[in-house]
Amino acid sequence: MRGVRGKLKVAWDRLIRQDASPNAIAAGFAIGLFATFYPFPVLDTLAALAIAWCVRANKAACLIGNNFVLLIYPVIPLLLTAEVVTGRFLLRSPAISPPGNAPLLAWVKHQTLPNLEALVLGGLVLGIPSALLSFWLVRAAARKWQKRHATGGFMRAAE
Image 1: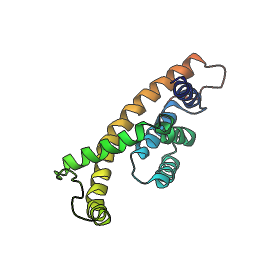
Image 2: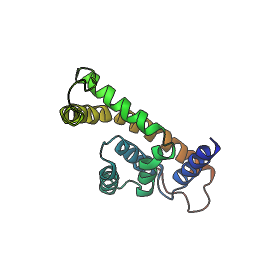
Image 3: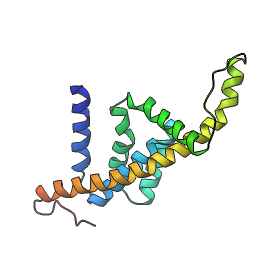
Image 4: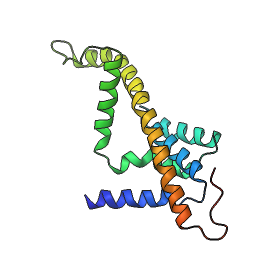
């Protein structure tokens, strides 16, 4: 458990010590965290970086936010499960049933589209509040750290 705590502390320290405004840091982290809920692994990072670049958010904070869940790896299956369950509930889809007599490949093919729809919807429903909450928390922490460690011209004007 100390290994995970240590990794989280290092990531947090790198995040709030960025030489950028608290809003840029928080926006980058929130964009990266939101992209974590996107169901396609490599595309989430590319999409997060593109969005961070477009809105002039901190790209390093975006990568930290995007990979934050990877630091606590056992959470990923729970996150995906929560997304599918939330999406299936909102879509009013029936529960996933085992294959029974059907061949496994046919069952997987039959279940892919409804589960993908549920995964995307669940990711949006869980990702938006997570990103908003992380924005406010990271912005407050970055402001506090920058105010405490302000020396000369180091601290940029808070937006």
